[in-house]
Image (cartoon, rainbow, N blue to C red; front, side):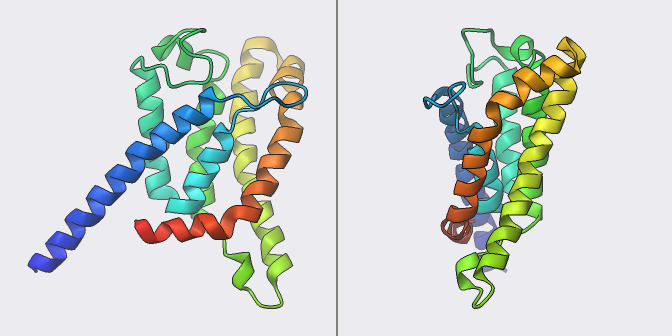
Length: 192
């Protein structure tokens, strides 16, 4: 009984450490801008999906929730904060839908169970493309929520023009990279 209690405590501590460092990774991914055409790219959606693949939907949801709570509380964790505001003012701005979409995307990538395509003999490419499709669905949820919110503020056509079109090539790159790196990401699950 004592051993079970100790294992449970160890697992909780590991999860809390992963959640804490995951929120830091999300903050860093929001702040670092990579030169990309037509606009600079952050790796934030990449990290959101990577958390779901690597640690599952429970830890992924807890991590993204902590990140959002930090931002709402006024910590400058969001992409353009503190330059464009902090706290609830920033959160309820034009990017709120995308930020809420992070919760659904991390849940989906964890729940849809990305598989290690390198271990599926004679089915490697099939599993790779199934993973690619699952990741595509997950990232699409971010844009569905983001565009819905943004279109309420600026109209649907402008939302597509400014909230989706500039990001398509970058997102395709990140989706392909995630699908390719998923076997490595899945190895992180052993730490939970």
